[in-house]
Image (tube, rainbow, N blue to C red):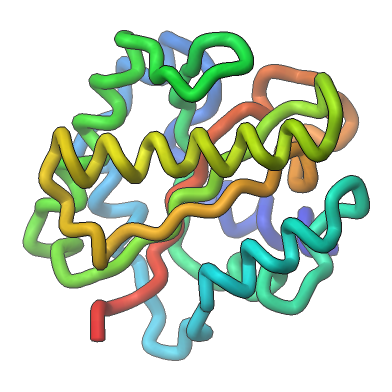
Length: 189
């Protein structure tokens, strides 16, 4: 059920799906518009609890976990960021996308908000390895945003879910499942 809710929420704000042609169409205004749709009634999300639930449910899925199920109500965006195979090294062609994300996060409409960077993998390989790899990749994006693009660290949180929330459940090994998700967690307090 959560996957359907997530898909419905993402379908409204989905601006980028895996594919190089689509990556070239991404622009700041699209990012800003998608990520700035924040509800005052949005639930408070604790990234540490998300990490605990992901680690405790390796191979079982996290979508039905209490803290993960609340994410469907938040402004979010799926983004393709390519990494070298089984690595946290961001491929050079994806730095443009990371730069566009950074530009959007510096925009006045978004500069007082905090964001969750969620790393996802396909189901190729061991579930525990994929969870670790997805966390490291989410950390790599967060690190790039903080160091290269000067996004304050107090605005960025990262968590990996491995293969537990495929965007294409019918094809868990599909490349579309390897993605990064940005979620607006609300105003910085």
